[in-house]
Image 1: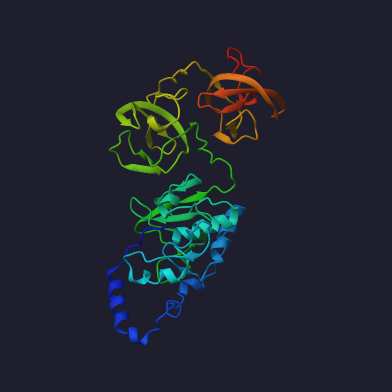
Image 2: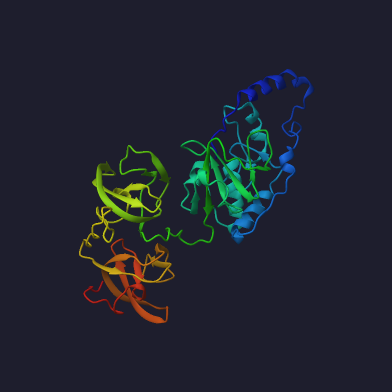
Length: 384
């Protein structure tokens, strides 16, 4: 659920005035429904072209809830959908949330993409959603709304996201704003503590790393932070709430870090310019195939593996030597892989080739030899 939105001093004064006329006001939460704000009269829907079919469906799902109550904690039941909330312990307007069936801001976003995809992609708080591994693209606050498409999620908060809304296009968004209000359409707010936006990956595929020449790796751990320079004391650029994919451009020796029982002084520079200690990247302490940031040559493979180059775009690795097995990794462009062994398994037909040989990589995943440069059966690689 969302963090409590900050109140203005004027809000307290308004509450005091309301208390003075309580005897004249209705007593039930439903009877005391506020007048629908003018902004809610705006059209709610996909207002500009370009969004994916799933994103458009998410917009329509969110818009179907216009006029439903904001309810603190609403939308966070076991199954996404309107639910009764509870008092947040701070805001007097939240006292009736236990009687109001509705959504808080992140609950509405969760429901919208659940209706659009049939999968619970966004279960969590606004801050969880900002750092979701389901993000296929991220946009900084400085970019404003220029790159946004309908269905993109917009966030507010300094350091920690406290609110989320869905972009509709044409400078409009739909949101569950705060206790005492209804889900509404309003103009976007890109000032103050606006923190940026994400585009939700909704097709079920592994989100690809940026196609910028970097090498794709998987991270591990929870709450992993990247920094503006290779030091844990540098400012945080982003946080990965769980394992995800990163595109590593280069690596170098810098501040020594001890975490999770490991010590390492090697940091990787990611495609967005941020830095991540190699402790949280799956692989050896010094990543094979990744150049030194000073211009050195890539490190040789370790652990008895042998380095090969892949070819093709959008190449996937799998948990088993079978294209129907779960996807383990994704290579948006040619990269270097380190192969431990190979074996005959499922026959694959792709790119006008047929091959039943699969290679096991150092991370335990499997890649059909079709996408490894070399012979159909790789020379110098042992049988698994």
